[in-house]
Length: 380
Image (tube, rainbow, N blue to C red):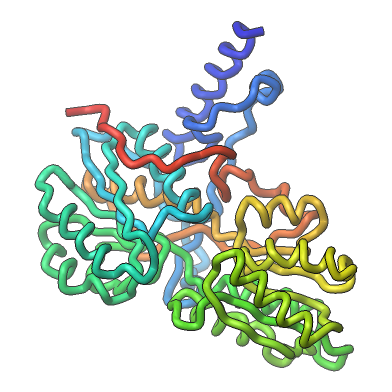
């Protein structure tokens, strides 16, 4: 049995490496499949669902436009990347970390990871950025910022000296070479348009509670603006709105308060911890099936809730792919290849019937994954 597993795993690794050379994605090298999955054969490689972006929307495409070139060249030296995240406290940034570290290993690049400890820690993130800038061995910075313009004075002088890429979170495009992200506006808009299609103008009104996240967080503002544009002109009626930190206990209290105030809700819509907490609260109140849950992004618990029919739908922006793409774009730029100024995955709404269209390893880290902070380059 062990020999069969080893042979199957070897075939799987070889298939992944071939897919990397052609700009495709197989399974992640760091998350080896179970024995049963390996014996069943590796999943076929599939093209990454990439999209050029411009501001809040998809970029205007010409009729003859080709897809973006993300094929990674062979590194000519042991390039070293420094990634700075807002934090590593939830599955979203763990997914980004998983994507980055696995792609760096695959391509033979060095990667050091630092994090600020939270979105309220701009001063600490500035310290982390300064540490990377002071390290002469660092060839490129990959920054998921906690503030759109809070790093401008540190990064602007680097434009002619060091490669800096913005990753996931919105950042001033004038202080980075390129951005690897999706507009968070699109997460809200995609949910809003989906709900509007289910409840068009002239039909019975749909009563919705909207719980997007902290009121003072930039990303919540983008999602909120997109959501309200998406539902405009429909029969969707926001009858309650609450804001609060995305801690599970806080979100549970917000859900309880909304359901006390609005016992006839059709939907609870908002951030992933809200959706997770709402499952148990609706069950406790005997309202399973009466009030649907929709999440503005995907986590492992939301993924499981969709599969079990407890969460109706969610939006995914493929954070694992964003991490992988950031590393590829860094390598391309360091090797003198052209890169897109603003590129990221497409934004997709998934429900129980469509979730299987997308490999889970594009969206979520594997079970039990813990943050990886350091990878040595394969070349000197």
